[in-house]
Image 1 (tube, rainbow, N blue to C red):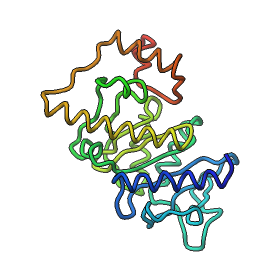
Image 2: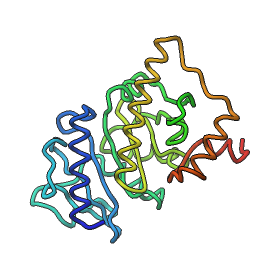
Image 3: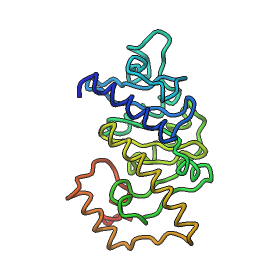
Length: 229
């Protein structure tokens, strides 16, 4: 993608997150890996509803600003983003937001670790709850690191949600899928509890993911699918 297209895509995703109520005030952050190995990121202290291309910053792998308007710096959560890129070379974008229902699970200390909805099984699998970490410190990157090997979507305890993808649209779609699944899971709980899909059917869905839908990224179900304990 061209530089201008990446800028416009980040702004579009930021505006959508704000319109959907996934972020308020200065919440949330977005980053994209650039072809030259640097990263484009949203700045700290600005509502996602006000993000425009000229407000975005470009940083290196150490989080240092190498291009941006005077006084602008990346989100205080950039350490979390950079850890994602460091742990996995296939990640091209990171999205952090506070979608209300999914974040409700995170605040309640509950994961979404179940296989009960076909689309979610195919797209992202089970969603873990990572340990608590103080924002803007290395506690959050250290908390998510063990989960990145198998998960593209995580709940951050008492905090919000994190999604990664090969590109920004993929990471954004995963946040959409997470929030919808959280809403459906909550409704199912109120109706007496979700009925999980049986293992043979999960295997078929994972086969569809890999061979028909060609979904990129990681999936925790492959551990079972490949016969591992």
